[in-house]
Image (cartoon, rainbow, N blue to C red; front, side):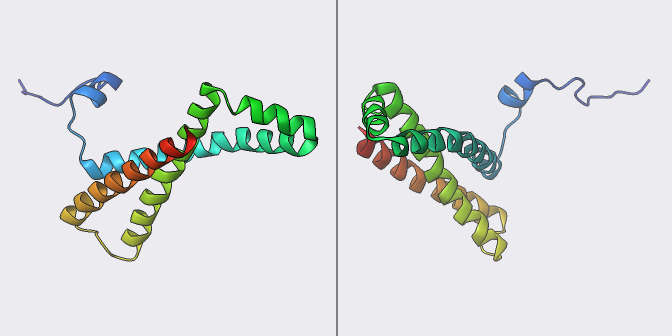
Length: 129
């Protein structure tokens, strides 16, 4: 009889709670997620641009709408996604140039991405509020 200890039926909860993901993998996944958020946020930004350019009343309406806490939260979320995506994108460009391709370099670069994006996200919160 064979003693097979390989996992069977790995579920979503196993991916989140059982496996230990390396930091470069987590930052890369977050980079992709921030790109999807920016893609979806483009629709809201284009709608806001359309409303603001339609008429003076539309601009006033958008200005009032942007004063609500929910709109400020959405704006902060989009700015946060943009900040993270920008910083992580620079990391990926540097890796394409051959900088930080080792495991140690990738972990260090991931920590730098988290540090700089946290600072930018905090500054975005201060700016929006």
